[in-house]
Length: 367
Image 1: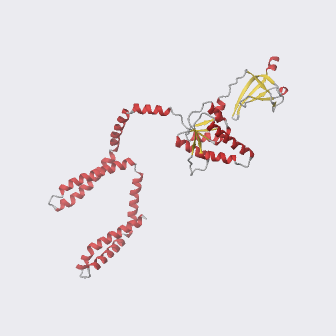
Image 2: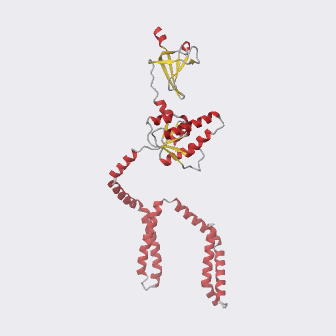
Image 3: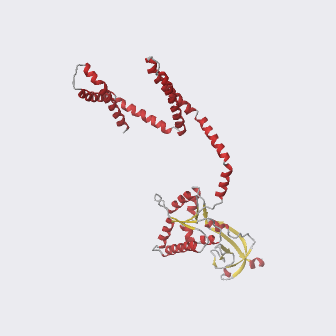
């Protein structure tokens, strides 16, 4: 495309030259035609001759233009800006000087000197603007810094006020279905507005309409939790109607929404938790909260439990705390279905949760 434009410019230039000067050449050669014929013929011949003479130069011109374009594109914006400003100032100064130079009644001076001054002062202006940009920027930055210092107290106060406003909490599908979010909101541990994205509602409705009985029950439970949040609990619940059409995954949409709203994602999805941390998005994990508030049990402590079933190993019994923590009772098989006092022997923390090992208190006394 660029090559065609350059060729068109050459043809137009050649046609203009032929139109202006070839009629006189025809007259000098003794060729007498009507004026319009001479003009048209001159334009055609001029365009054709100049195009043929410069046909081999077109590629070099195109390469030069592309080199200039690439250089300008790669150049920093500050360099281009201050270089252009310097060039403009240099051309203005050259114009003012040339006004007086053209009054000199010497043909060489009033024709050659203005061209020389224009090129020289334009070049010097560009170089001064380009090489002294750091000093100009420092002057501007000093003024901005002084202005910022004057308003620092008011800005600091505004920042403090903004930091006191709780961020929106954006719920994902898993934490809604889990249900514990309603209990947390009821205890006022979660501040700020609860945001339910429309695309999360659609996913929840899709789960509630599933042909699989288990998934259908989970989806309906999630809808019941949302109704409880909106109607029965003292929290502000808002529905985000927007969507991100270019993103397909619901988790990716949640991360994008959290960035746009500067909000916090609330979830119990381990993978979503990691994605949020990787993308510097704040996240609250209900499972982390549950693990953090579990009672601390130390070896040697006593507790009262009910043995539910036998364990994997010989003579083991299994019990559970209210939070679901498994207690393995050594020599506890004989106490299945009974409530007994046990003494904690050790605590094992695994990726799946916490496991407590204990033995009946009566056995310890016997020893």
